[in-house]
Each structure stands twice: as C-alpha cells, then as structure tokens.
Length: 168
Image (tube, helix red, strand yellow):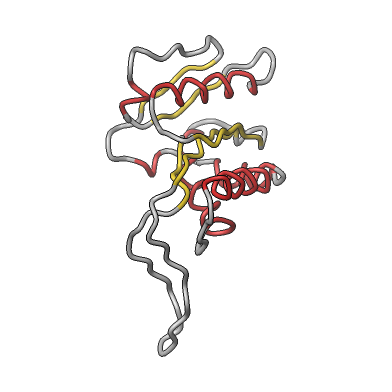
C-alpha cells in the first residue's frame, strides 16, 4: 500500500564486482514522503498518491483515490497489512472496495511490495534529493513510468496461487 521514498540516513550498500569500490551517494538528512499505491494486475492499471505522512487521514485519501479508479460496475479487493492506519475503525471504506487483511509479518503475500521493489530498483535508488518537492517529483515520475507499462504491472502483480483449481 505504501512505500517511503527519500533520505533515511542509514547505511548504504551496493553489490559490486570483487575488487572494485563503486561510489554511491548517501545523504544524512531525514526528508521523505510516502507513495500510497494500488494496482489492478488484471487491467494493468494503478492508482497512487504521494503524501507527506502515513496515517489514517492519508489512508482515507488513498481509499478515495482507489475508489475513483475502480472500473464502473466493478469491485476492488484490497490486500492490506495490519498497519494501524489500515485497521482503524475511523476509515470510511468506499462501497466498491473490500479490504482483506493479510497475516502479520507476511509482506511477501502482497504483490504491491514487488511494485515498490521495482520502482526502487529502476528509478528511485542511489539518489540524493535536494528538496522535499524533488522527492515528490521523483515518486510521481516513477509511478507514471510504471503505469505507462500495463504489461509490467500485470507481470509484477499476478500470482499463481489465487488461481489454483481455476482454469483461466
């Protein structure tokens, strides 16, 4: 559902050929934003918002954005971890969305985790952002690049296990 993007002030690692010492930028600041995103692998589309916080208010904005992007007459099933802002009774879940809560500590069950990995590997890694606006711009640009590739969204988001016993 969300990925933190920006400076984290932590150790930076990089794979490299033995005997080489590649340079990699590391920033000591603490600036970040959250990219709240959801994908529909069947349609190869996604909906996202770049937001300043990860809390109930931001989650409500995200649910409303997903609801606006659900195809007419369709219903979205939203896989969520058990973050406090996902499970609170303060959310007004739109009628065209049904949340399904995954077991605790099981991010591998949520295909959107692979989306975050793909965005980081391709467009968001090894970058020092000068301003908060640069973080937002980079997050939005990465999301637009992804959504311009519907087949990529489908390949990242599809799983075999939901289709066990079904003929497609």
